[in-house]
Length: 522
Image 1 (spheres, rainbow, N blue to C red):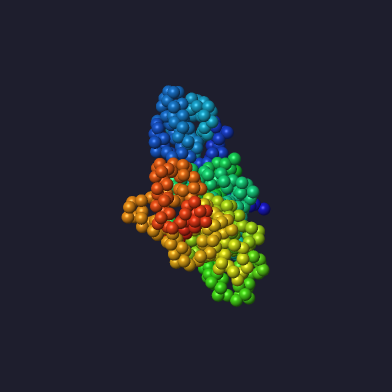
Image 2 (cartoon, rainbow, N blue to C red; image 1 turned 120 degrees about the vertical axis):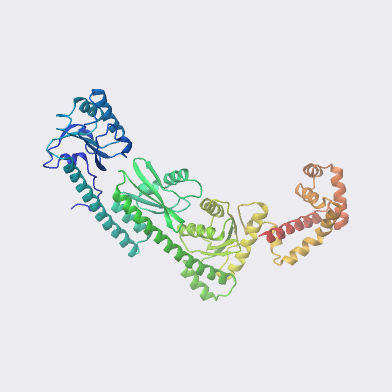
């Protein structure tokens, strides 16, 4: 049984030579009589090439061919250089037989040249070609409609992106690959498609200016690949790559164009469902963090979102991009990792609740999200808790994120914060500010009034563990100047810098001030 989706060959010179009743005789170029004929055109111009686009079959009686062998060979060379599909030479008008120089030039160029007997009008050849072209176009459109029905049925039956990609690969006889906006596969029909994902993405990135979406054609290891953006209303959602060993046919292009619309619909539907799912996730996570759910309701909700009812949990706070983009990237990352997760966006940050076992690797998560978004992402994790204590893990994740911002870290868990944990345990900002001001306010006032450098000098002094020479070098002052400043600081604060306890209090006050400043910025 014939496969209805095998691409048809276009009309060729070989087809026309085989038409009964025309009695055409091939004189040269047999090796290339399989070339496609795009159009047929009769011309008596000495040089018709300025009006040709390539792929035409030229019919001529040779009126302007020229009388010398050089002119006749030059005529044939011009046609061959213009990518003409072949030449039909009509006898009985200017020539009783086809000139030998024309035949020899065609043989050298491998150019199809056939002789048209005097009784055969050019219109008969034109009608034969046009009839076949129309039949070919009709058959291609019929096959395209059948193929489009196959693709549409895959969507109607809920086959999803993978099912639609498989149907597209079946009807084109190749493979299909759908990449997201970060170059990661959303669907792939074969190992051949999956292994080409990175190279296709690199070629796409090299071929398009940043921020624009264009179609790209390339050849990769013998496969012809077409890459096109998928989306609607100017919003690109993904990129579709279709490949096969053979050159894509008109049927392939028609079917791929229809597939683009169906993929856009599937992605829009998936996005709508994901947005609704995320709203439900966010509402549930917020209620869980606020302690508004009973133990039974919390357990049922966690199970509904894919969690083990008794599994320990951990909250990760994320920032570094628009919450919507960060939420999309986190959703995609967690979906690929498997297991339950909840996502909620607040005040420019995203909260992510995941099972604590297996342990989440903050470095891997931050790196993965940064790669997907194309911008640095910071991640702070809270402690491992039971469902009833998710609020505490969330607060600790926020604290860890605040310290990451302060220290310039990419990620940190609450258990890694060291002395910061003591300060962060003072959850009332007013209490933290009161502690900081009790030690630093007199110093800050002195610096304002006298354009002093007491607080920067204190920071350098403590940073270098009370080593006068190193601290003075960092400040670009003489050590005697630094000693004078520290005596003034002791006078104003009532603390003794030779006392390790007093130095610790001053260091905590500086860290508390930094935390308050970062909290205000965040």
